[in-house]
Structure formats: C-alpha cells, structure tokens
Image (cartoon, rainbow, N blue to C red; front, side, top):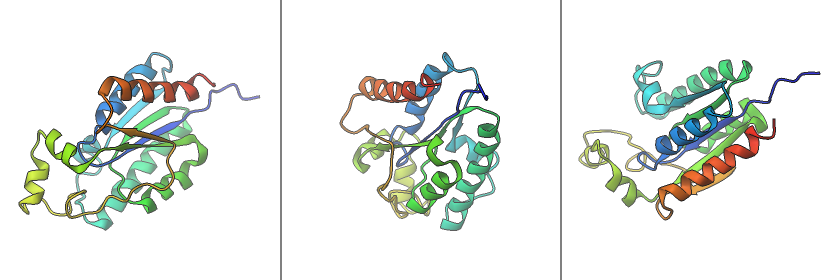
Length: 179
C-alpha cells in the first residue's frame, strides 16, 4: 500500500494585476508549514527564465503554458504540492492543464475587473499596452476568456485581501489535511 500523500496542483489564473501572485504567495507560505514538499511557480519569474525566449502571440502563449505544464509534471511526479500563478487566458489552455493532471489540479480563478487591475498596476504595463507600446497584452488587445470549469472563485475587486487570503487558505487546507 502506498502511504505517500497525494500531491495537488493549485493553478491560479486571472488578468494581470488581479492578485494571483499575492494570493499564491500567501497560500504557499501557509501550506509550507504543513507540507515540506511544496513549490511555487510564478508566471513572471518563468518568463524571465525558461520562457524568456517567448513573446505574447497566441503561439508563444500556448508554448508558455505547455512548458509550464511539463515543469509541473516533473515535480508532481515526485509528490510535490505545486502552486502556479499564471494568467492562462484561454479555456483551451486550461483544458490542457486539466487533461494533464486530472482531479489533482485545482483551477482557482482570481476574478478582478479591468479598472481595478489598471489601478493596481505599479509597473505601468496597462498604460503601455493602451499606448501601443506592448502588443498582445491580456485584457487590452488579447482576450481573457471567462473560465468555464473552475474549482474556486476569488473576487479581488469586491473582497478585502484578508478575506480572500483566508478563503484560499481554507481551500488549500481541504486537500492538504485530507492526506
């Protein structure tokens, strides 16, 4: 009988500046106390490393997700709980993720209205996109499809951060404590 705890993947999706990384970091810190085999992959950091040769065309976005899935597979097979924070704008990409990991992946939609995302943008990416300096920017000239099949919805436009953090921690607890 295999006594190895089941590992889960928590994949946070949403518009740029919706709060994905903040919530993923909080979940990581919270679950790290309970599970020594946990890792966090942030889309921005992946784009500075293994995905730095990719742009934002549909083809490059698909490749970005494909590479991330392959990286996650390696750690998942070793029993790690994985947290991914990545825009993942299209339902076809989310279906690929679900197909790769089945019920062990939990898609968490960090919903946030565009106005709030723009107001939170400390890097000025939305402004650059609206001025035509950044092409294919999600939410401006590249679409973000409202997800069809998610496991958890967190609305960072309407909820205060402590409430949202508590929701994601409670959600993570359901799986980590079931092992």
